[in-house]
Length: 246
Image (cartoon, rainbow, N blue to C red):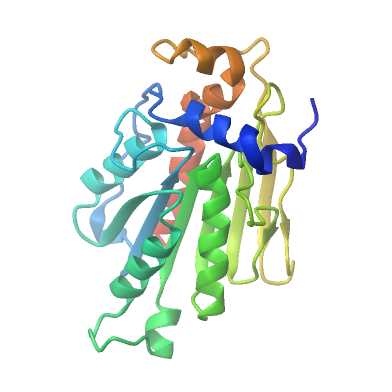
């Protein structure tokens, strides 16, 4: 089945949100801790969960990643996890963190000092691009955006990566009723590097989804397999950690 706008509106979108709510994900080992002395100052990492998943639900890969980063970098890196409907809250939190002199407004220097990476799965991946675009309107650069099986939220554009983003990458799969965007592109290729659109296929290379509700396994198994796939999230984590060194 080809990806279409049908999943952006109406009942299918509601069903998708319901099916995505509170689903567990498989764990994996961290690729290794980075010496906190090597972390760039002012680093901010923001993650978004998909569907109606709570941002504190520790069984999801997105939340697990945020937990590992907080543990490894107790100082020097600000890690925040949000639900995909909390984009404005995430934006306000970033502005607060960048306001180092606490005068209630961002100077040109405070904006240019921003070291921001944003990632998300499903609707959370769509919100990742939306947040980056909102920051761009305020003149704030973003080092990296990562989309995992991005499902376009109503009223959003998760295909075109705004020019304030230095690098972007897209991981997706194309099977099942819910499948991610197969391609992202730079709004301005002179400012944004697309690291790649990487497809995963779980027809033969299955991922353990034990513990997921039966309806998730029946209706959206590949979509939750990529969320649970350790090989995908190792790459996501490695990319984010590489930006913390810059």
